[in-house]
Image (cartoon, rainbow, N blue to C red; front, side, top):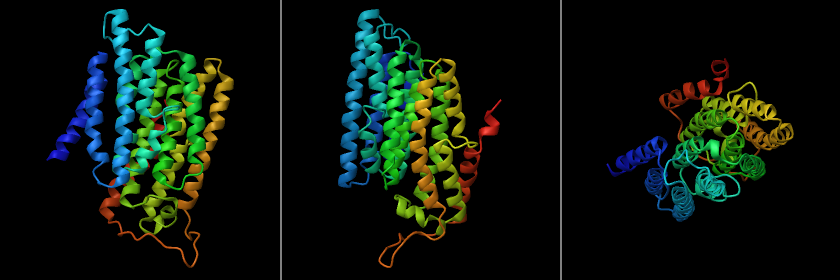
Length: 340
């Protein structure tokens, strides 16, 4: 009963934050949102989970302080808490830093890999997807008042550090965290020029990430070594996982390629071709570690030695597999339906 009430609070706080038009109400809803997810992070009572909950709370509290500071300063300067009245450059930049800290973009991204690694797979799914909706909606509302140079810099740095950080990871949750950082870079980079493209990108990422985490949870897959023997549990789920990973990497003609194509087109339209080229080059870093993971997933004979151990898994039932396979397949091949 208590878990259900906390989950309802998590959903309602996000909905109210996205529907609010006042910075004071948005700050209150984001605080409720933070307090609602903390029990999910620390539920396992493991020291690593407690550490992850502490890091998440401190980071979100700092971001909330910056958000309240920016909102109060803007209200003092303009006489209103209205989100659309962010004409001052200092307050709009401070608000941007606060909201990007909540989402996990460079340079305030260091908390995200550690928090995801200390959480369960389902909690990591919530942090990577649902928890980004409210801050992204607030950024969409104030996108007209954000400094373009600042968002372009944050976006390029996020795609670069997200790609480099995920290169040497063997833990899938940390790899997904760095992938989230890189994806947030794609989202932020075109926020001021074409906010709708940013929203398309973030929601496409959520659609692709959700079945990926759910498949990982169903197959008890947490490391690259587990990926090599995932096919023995469910070959169909393994195939869906490989397609989801390639789609998240942005490999054409899969779904994840569509928002990247829209963003590249917008950057070139705005005469930012050098920046578009650098962003495309940094996306190759993300593609490389996703291709590595996909390669290990599709191996029929995993690399092993006489002393190596294999993770024991309970065989998945058909019902569990069939619930996710249509969702995963549909979300992966959604490009033809989205292109006008």
